[in-house]
Image 1 (cartoon, rainbow, N blue to C red):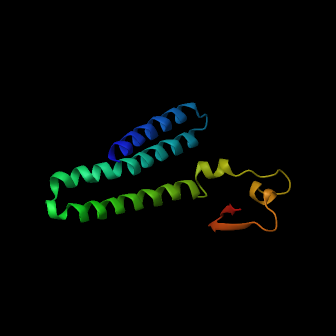
Image 2: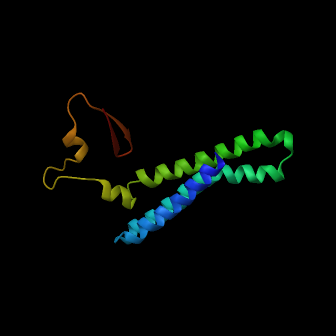
Image 3: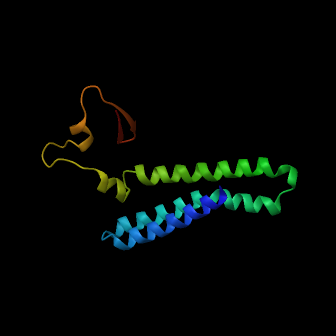
Length: 129
C-alpha cells in the first residue's frame, strides 16, 4: 500500500508539471501547481506519517499515532483540495462554468430534466442522476 501511495504521488506531481507546462493561462498554471503539490501531499501523507512514527514513536503508541496523524493529514488536504476546486475565485471554477451567451443558463441547467436532483455547495451544483 505504501509503495502504491508513493508511486501515485510521484505520478501526480509529474502529471501536474506536465499539464502546467502545456497551459496558456497563468492563473490556471498556478492552480495546477497548487493542485499538484496538495495532491502529492495527500498521496505521500500516509508513507511519511508511517515513516516518522516508525522511528520517533514508541512501539505501543505507533498504531494510534499513525491513525490520528494520518486522519488529520488526509482531512486537511481533502478540505484544501475541495476548496481549491469549488472556490468561486478558483481559475478552475471560472473555466469549468459553461454558460450560454444570452440565456444565462449553465450546462447543468440545460441538461437537466424534471426528475433530476442537485447537491449544492455554495454556488456549485452537482447533478445527481
